[in-house]
Length: 143
Ligand SMILES: [Zn+2]
Image (cartoon, rainbow, N blue to C red; front, side):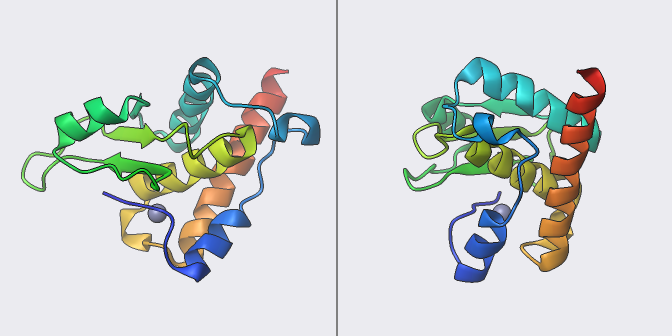
């Protein structure tokens, strides 16, 4: 379980994540279809599949966790003795409103799935940036 929005250093590192989207796309709004396509790219480059959940009530009821309105995103890997094969990633579309914010949230949460022990250290955000760069290369290669 992870939450991002907290310590000022963490917030600054999160805000410094650079989306590979072209400048004119970064401020575009996020819809579920776009977010799902984008999430699949992060799952592909990280080699870590996850289920994207945007229904936060369903997420809370499945996980037993409270998803507070100020949370932007969170991953859930299941209880310690019964990890999910495919973890859940909840994204709060009322907090994550632009594609740039969505890229940061997807990179941040995917990073937690790939390197959970990194916490919010600088290395964690370096990994998140690497994932963003790889998504950019994947999209660039396909274009
Ligand atoms: Zn986090």
